[in-house]
Length: 500
Length: 93
Ligand code: SF4
Image 1 (cartoon, rainbow over the protein chains, first blue to last red):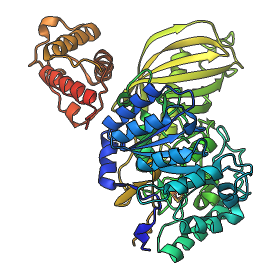
Image 2: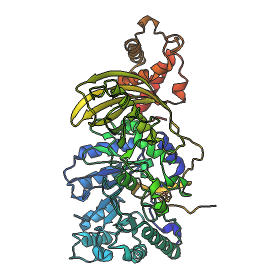
Image 3: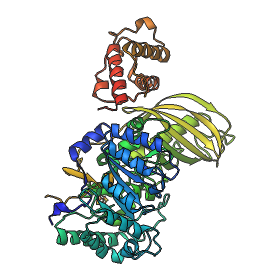
Image 4: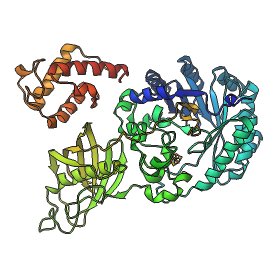
């Protein structure tokens, strides 16, 4: 067997030229869509059509159990009629012999998901009557139908955990021998798991396991790949060429970066992709990611798992905290919420804002406690009205300063004007205030922001500011991905060994 | 699918944006007029103009080479015509 016969996620192969073109035109090469049992098939169909118009040629059908949707097979055949490839992620529900034959006839890649947090991986797949629902029956139906075949990839997805860690190398080897495609993914941190979450498998253990798997492939099939997060044998390119649409119509960068950039029920997919700053940041990752990843020799081929970074730090552009190469540099990976001293040029007592809480799609939240005294506090202890536009401007500076952390020095910024400010009520020393910012528009280094300052649920002031913020992004030293990148289920690429 | 506006409609709507946002008399809004030198806008007005045009035409305007080369009102009409067609067809860039 030659190395090229392996199906290590090499089915959907995109070269770097088409990836670059897709990034430039804010298009798609792949779509991940969540199909829930009650999902509106017309909406799904419409989204797939829009994705096709944007250049997508692969659709990954995901969800709790997409096979539970009554019209899922009709959907599959319609997607295939658009000459798009389909990958189905399933726990095996309803996988009769007839369904398996239908999927093979449509060249659908089927990825069977093993239960996470449970040992006995091979048993889960092959021994009926256990705790694994219909998985063994589904596996048998698929094999009886002719899977795996050249036109019918059969994959098995496993979340690496403490329970299955020891058996992963032998299971991987067995999958290879059976011509099944392994999808070993690193554990996903819970949302809002910042600082407190510990991976069930430590970074160095993940590294040694990936090294064993890579060595297994090298010795068994001559397939060379370099261990790097987040998928064994592949590098993730989701955030450059794909997006994820939830069952309720929200569009997100991927299943890991769960920040909505808008809804397909309100705007077209083309508009959402075109307008999203988060997607643009992720697509320009070589210029935007912060922290130790930037110094890594793999940076450019790899940008770590954006989902893990977001879940653990609250920042979708942070370095991947679970990568073993970053194990000794955790202190350099900043988490949200974070203090803004050093992020904004203002010093106390002029600086009023204190904490950058979160960053979303064209929005951010900043907090402060009204000080006891200072230039903005009246003799009565009340915060002067003139302070509110200043607070909004400082919050905007904190947001821009945090995003520019990768670059030396603080970015310069000026408040150019304020508009439509309205006030309702007053804040006193000791009150905790929340500033919600929304970027109405950005043009070059100029921006218009809407700001709202609240105490509890009461909005004390709201209005618009016009700012000029320096954008210190540098293009020097930018490293680009390797010549060819491919997509596993529409979304990942095999990492390559360094050439020099 | 949004309707693609005709050249006449683009000109009328652009002129209305300039008249409403910057209080420029309609009779001065001629294609050959230079936006900065003749109509009196400055770089600080640019972002307001962009916001107003984006809203009025439901388009996204990014700072790129094409925008930087706009000098006259006629250039601006042509740019908006092109961008609305591209963005509706999803062929931007
Ligand atoms: S340090 Fe970052 S770029 Fe390097 S391998 Fe790890 S995740 Fe990838």
